[in-house]
Amino acid sequence: MAVKVAKAKEKHEKLPALLPSQRMAILKALSDPRRLEIIERLSQCPRCTACSDLRECLPISAATLSHHLKELETAGLISIERQGKFANLTLRRDVWQAFLESLQRL
Amino acid sequence: MAVKVAKAKEKHEKLPALLPSQRMAILKALSDPRRLEIIERLSQCPRCTACSDLRECLPISAATLSHHLKELETAGLISIERQGKFANLTLRRDVWQAFLESLQRL
DNA sequence: ACATCAATTAGACGGTTATCGAAATGTCAA
DNA sequence: TTGACATTTCGATAACCGTCTAATTGATGT
Image (cartoon, rainbow over all chains, first blue to last red; front, side):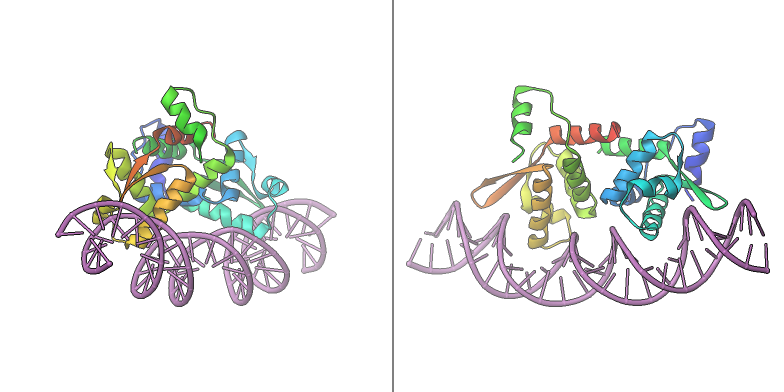
């Protein structure tokens, strides 16, 4: 999923512009306060141990958090790297940048 | 409503940063395909005669369009200038710019 | 005054979504 | 193996939201 984006990041290639449908998916994903806060926190930490850390800040159940994370992942904004019991989240800064540019281009 | 923004535009002042609540309101407003398309169209035309023009493009009833316009106005993204029977819409480009910057600042 | 037209409001309906508790899955350590 | 722990999935519930039709408001021209 969203393979091109990951490859482009590794190879320092220029990202293709976001499709309108991808832009819409991201906007929908950002239209919830908890999800926006997750993105904000991920953007501040270079690495963020997942739910464990996030659940200390957000007043939601583990189930709800898991739901939001899946939404963000589906929208392409974060990647979830599972390691044993835990899950590490990272903001996809290249996708985020492409998203901002697609809004600037209007 | 959003008086400071309008004044700042006229006087070429620097806009204050968006409050988190304003940013959230704008994100919510943009999370609907029709509203995003309205913003897109407004950004292309320097002046856009309201519902008359928009309804030719959007497959929605007048009532639904009116609802969406009110949402965009409440979020601060557009201003509606009523002249007799008609309503003229304009994108608040200063608010839009402030919104983009508040996302870049993350 | 009246008819017409643009836009808004009111009210209802159906689909979507955020949320939870409970159960399931999977991992690690003793 | 067994138990504890992190995360996900399931099923249900309540609130929200986009949409419509019908009725209303307000302005214009005859």
